[in-house]
Length: 197
Ligand code: URA
Image 1 (tube, rainbow, N blue to C red):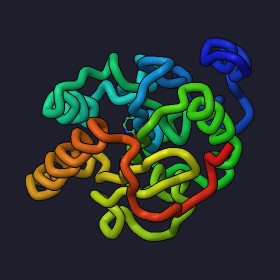
Image 2 (cartoon, helix red, strand yellow):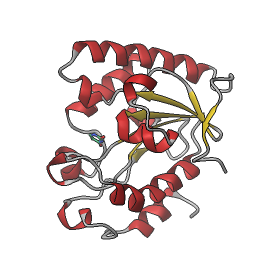
Image 3 (cartoon, protein in one colour):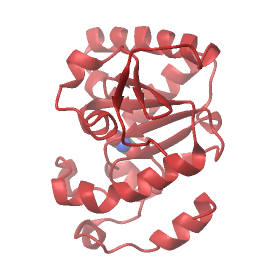
Image 4 (tube, protein in one colour):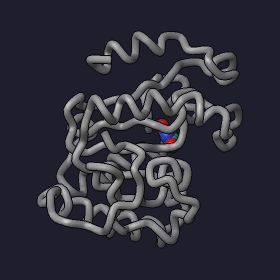
């Protein structure tokens, strides 16, 4: 694949897993094709399923505020999810769905080639860092996955009604701002080989 639009065309009106039968709109991803910063969320929710864009509901509004806190707008980054289609009732992604869908995310990462990947919550963090450690133990610490710097943080949806988590997210975004200012500095040792090329 040579471009995101080619990849999107290849995915098409996907029915490679049963979520293709229940979704309204496939949510491919949005943002700059050459972004330095890429966010990986979990899966589209109700609003995203209707609009075809990731993070357009309440969690997305918080994500936009967090981006603004470090002087960024969503148009300057790339946002995608582990799953491209909404699981019914917003249930957790299932292992077979993750297996079917994530080759496309992997290809998005390869094409965008960001400097920093921020994983939002448990599912994205487990996939990108190939870890079973929960997000609470990993958030706010920098990792390497192949040539990418990875920063796991709480999922914004988890912070919507939890002021403590919201403050933690603000602090983790402050760290993100520092990392973006000096992305090539050495961080913690290699943790995963998933995106190694
Ligand atoms: N939650 C996610 O993980 N992704 C979205 O796109 C929206 C909500």
